[in-house]
Structures are given as C-alpha cells and as structure tokens.
Image (cartoon, rainbow, N blue to C red; front, side, top):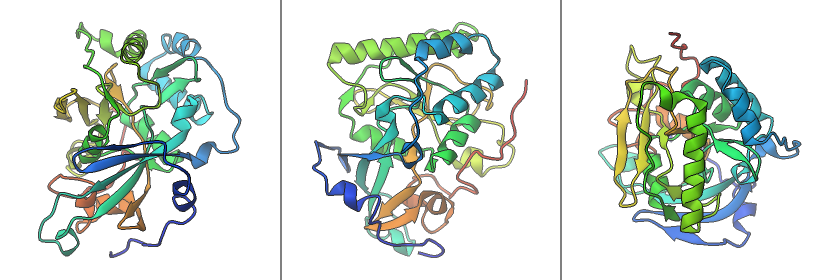
Length: 307
C-alpha cells in the first residue's frame, strides 16, 4: 500500500459497530449502516445555540468573504444541529478496476459521512448553508474530514433513505446568491420533508449540489481560484448538475451544499487516510472514478478570487 499506514481501526469503528444498527439501506453497490458515531471535534464542547434565523439576519448585511468567516466561526463553535455532530457509515464495493495491481479485484470501502449538509443553527431552527470551497475546506480540516469526489457523492445518493424532487429557483441576476434565498430554499426543503414524512438526519437525495474534489480544480493549472460542484440527484438517480468548474471560488448559490466525510476510511478492514488515497496514482480509484489522481486533495492554500 506504499506510504499508506494500514492498521485495523479498533477504537473508532469497533466499539460503535458493536452497538445495534437501527436500520440498513442497500443501494446497487452500497449500503448505509446507522451507527451514530460522534464527530470527535464536538465531543466535550459546549453546544452553541444561535438560531438559524438570527444568523441569517446578520448574513443579509455582510459581503461574501465576511459571511464565509461567519459560517466557519458558527459551525466550529458548535452551532450545528445535533444530527450533524455524528457520522453514519456507508459501505460499498469498488467497481472501478484497471491494470493497477490493487484494483484488479473489488475492494470493500467504509466511509463515515454526515447525514445531511452542513447547517448553521440548532435542532429547532437551522439553515443548510451554501458557502465557497475555501470555507468548506476550513471546516473539513478542523473536523478531520474531506469533501467528497463525484464518485462518493453518487455512493451517498445510492443509499438514500428518501428522495425529493429538486426544487430550483429561477436565476434572476444574482438573486440566488443572496442569503434570503438560502433560507427560502431551506424552508422549501423542510416543507418537502414534512410532506414526505421524512426526518432531519435521514439520508435524503435531491437537496443540494455538492462542492467536490476533482482533478480539474486541484490538479490542472490555471483553475486554482475556481470551485467544482456536482450532483443534485433526481429520484430516479439522474444528476441535475454534471461536474461544473466554471464558477470562481467567490460564488455560492442556494443550491450548493457541503457534505463532510471523515478522513479515516476503511479499505478491506484496514485504516487508510482518504487524502493519501486520492493523491496516490496507485490507489486513488478506490475513492474516485476520474482519469487521474489529485495533486492535492484539498482546496486549502488556493487563492481567493476577489472581484
């Protein structure tokens, strides 16, 4: 496995997996296991309780980069619903194989994933917050997480416990980049949850496009100031948004979301570092279906695009 350190994961996964699994959802190549593993960063920290509405009233008054800092500060202070402070487990069999020795046979991969998109607020009043990739990466790094690849976004959608028809807003000028539309979109999603009988914390597809890791941004020269988005799955599995890399990293609209995956992943029962996998020419296709590895599996260090 090259420079990857492979050991059995005993503390993080073993103890949690000994607990009863509430339910298991199967996709074509994947399954979801409800294990409720706490996000280590939040353990022992006081729970902040700024309501989502209060945060959004402040968000309406500031520029993009100031709002980015506000989002990061709020999330890292614990201003997230409790369901977003624990991981669930998704297990899938790799289907991408080629001539590289390790990929000649399918492998079993386990990832720990937040069940919904990063939100600001508390259990009773929260808003799923669009943001740029630099802020998303700051949150991910602090929580020892990565952003998903398109391949991982599809694996998550594959085990959804429910499905919503996407709810788009008309793109009138830059209206859809305003925080008030973020809140309107979140309210629409919550209303659709209620109509379908879903509960927050379930894996439900059709909510958002994901900010993703891709070689088109993180490997190719000249793209360092952009953001990659992908997904927004229809109930039949189709994606509304193919991989898109044209927006600058100053751009976020109501349809964007941040899904976090714990950086420690399990491959065939052994612990691996997801970033090391994605940067390895021999291993990256365990977590990606792109034609090349990432030069770096992070937006950290990329420059801001200042208008």
